[in-house]
Length: 417
Image (cartoon, rainbow, N blue to C red; front, side, top):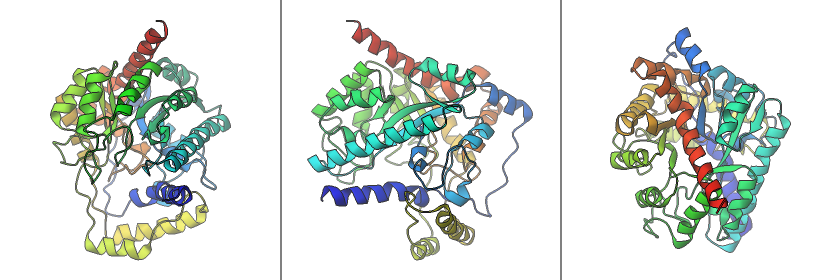
């Protein structure tokens, strides 16, 4: 496939995915359970972050601004500044995401340029709202930025395909703020095997280039993210990384046997090595649509390209989707299922091995857990389950910042040699 046609395919897939994956709230959705004033006060007191915000996919949408209040049922977005304030989200990792394409010179060139543009778009958002957001480069920056009354923004990379075979690009992205990276996405690439490639393994874990990728990530102080990676990659990451690893948006295979999820033995292995599993809000149940819903969605057709569509066009499509959701509700999990997943991982990995990465704006969201305004429910449920304030804050931010700090410390030790 040519670079031009691949570019079109990937851009369309990326920007259309939010509309296809995010489901508007429907009439059958139960009312939100109340969060007590005590729980809300505790939630707001804590430093909170989410490790996987795909929100940069919206940054260049016509008429879309992160400073404005949006509603998922009207434009499919789940994160913005007003909702961060409402849901008590202090910051998180904004993702440079590139859907997997061809392992060719043209493919690598396209992916590199696409990812660099996304990094620039994140910087442009931060510059446009410098009074409300600030780029975070160290673990300590999160608390400092929060104390200054702003939201902190770390940068992560989902899928390292854009690096091609030139690992010096890792330093380029690091200089642009990158602090977490995953080697692979839904398909195998030049670095590693995916958990979901229908063709199966090609490397039995990392490729020789991927092994160099691990070492370079450690040298630079990048946290290694194993969400989407094969079991072999998880095992090799734990064994070879000089610092703890993370799964930025994953769930337990014991709850739902999906290739994207992680079995209990590996959950424990990650946590025992000082890492953490950030709980996702998808791949927790079979979401196969009913024949009637599938037919209705096919008749509606693919959503508008969010890169170019007007807000009016997006809302018009969203309204039609909402009508289908009402007539033929989606098969979705709910907030109780999300918490069942989190509580299972807590039982296996302990409170020092769990964090939150719900995959907002990347397909996440469930009944009663539609966007980030629902985040205080997590705090309320954890407290109801008997977890201490210290445990809850570790889950919300402490574990991730500890892992990030460990990566920073190792990088400094290497640089000092």
